[in-house]
Image (cartoon, rainbow, N blue to C red; front, side):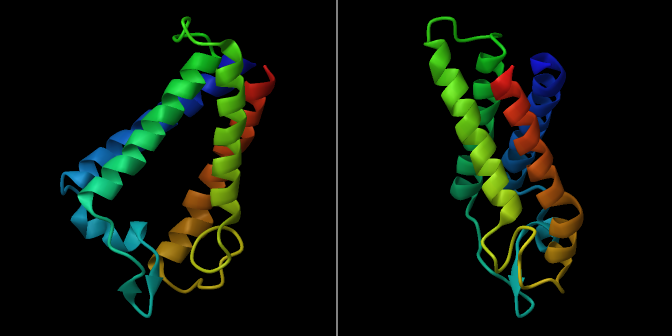
Length: 140
């Protein structure tokens, strides 16, 4: 079961990481309203390229954790490390799916923006699916 869940999650994390690298390089500026929460028709924050690269690094670190849990790399590291990190990663994605009760997640209050609609239909469900798959990987 670990590979059946872990490989797709690893692929998704890799694609999301690459997407963030592309955004940090300036590609896809037209999609800003799809990717940043809005308050009063204005972006709630303006991520810098450095912050966007930090998110990409976090996603690539998550990829490394999943691949390590699947024993595809990291033989020199304690196996327990990958198990604990997989649980932590699952918690991060679950918390993202739940949200901060204002702008993102299933329980957000602001729901009438383009980002909010995409968050409800794609981003939060994807985060929940990743979290549940990571639980399966952690248990395998």
